[in-house]
Length: 578
Image (cartoon, rainbow, N blue to C red; front, side, top):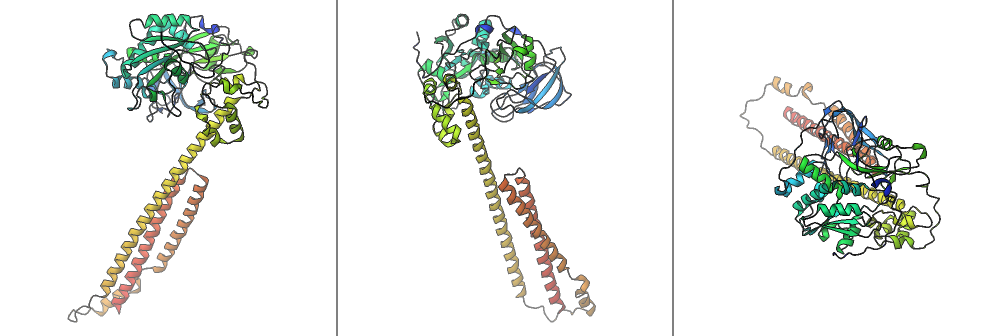
């Protein structure tokens, strides 16, 4: 039997899983419209590939990758594109995001599907490209692009692949039910991952409160060399770092990733999606979602299309809005409240919890910290939650970061045990957001400074070149003045020719050129003042102003050259007349 290790902290909140785990997965019915966000993953949003009014088939690409950390987004069914624009999306920020609204035609016609035949003989790079093209991102909650995660740094050799089946969050049973109903698909997906990474061992970690799922997995892995490891039930044992520590005894280093210690974790839902993509050619357009809570008459797990409005999904489970309090996406520990039930299901929607006020009572007003230390005892990352709270409350972000704020996995264990009812995790999330914003602002300022310095260097270089040309012209003019006069034998010009050369009508308009130069210089100074003011304010039009100033500089130089040329021509004309 494999030796199990321990992780610090942890709690045992009420599980409340039987509400939704006792019935098989059911298929959600088709809504009137689907709202598909272009960003359902960590990284850059997908780039729109369709236009309003377009007809699409099931599986067609709606948005393609934009940058390295991005995955495509596909049509969950056939129909036509009604709208492309901002719409409310499920996110703790509550902000709108760019979405594609699809009106289903009810035919559910597939586009072209491209499975990979004989996948066990396929090259790993081809498998990775196929997984990425299918738009698969982690279904456990983080949404990290799977094709990128399965391509660890070349310096990291993956020795152990862990399939995370712990599902420790209360109420959520999507992974449990998926394993019980479709264990073969889960194990098949894990074998594809093994084919890509070629690790020394493959483990499936699952909590001991899922006996039916354990039995299904053990039957499915028979003869594959994959080991099912049963671990004690304790929250948050399903956290990536905690599960790695329990199964291997190793800790992910501060600021590092599991690949740094030769380990890679995947969620069971992600493994099933990999199986569907490779063997059936299906992109990630649906997922298993837990519907639970006292405000639902028919709780359970449903297979729903990505983009299904949350209200439609809740109504299909007998949603009693009169009995409902807040509706959470996710569990009670790490989930967040949904302000608008018109928001769509996304790739990371593993649970919708519609609890009654008695089941999920509103938190009482927070009281002053009594320094009991319970939060430190419960923290699985061995942080100092009380100290981090003080830093966050006083705005000392640098000190919070020095105390490893970003090691916090936001599991909520500290908030759950706090006798003063302080929403500690909310403070940590807010402080993390402020620090990220400060970093992004610093990056923008650094880029602006680099652009300014590059422009200054360019202007100085151009000025030096212009000065060199002026000096060359000056030297050429001085040399010309030193040239001996023409021979007396040369035929004298006629009086008429002399008069023509000296005619006032041929003299350049020096006064007009001088006015033009002064006007150009004044406009340049005005544009430079506008540019300096825009830089101080951090305005968005700095680049445009820089180009305008550069163009005015060129106009000043042109006016200067025209005036110098006119003056030089006038001098030469006057000398000839004499």
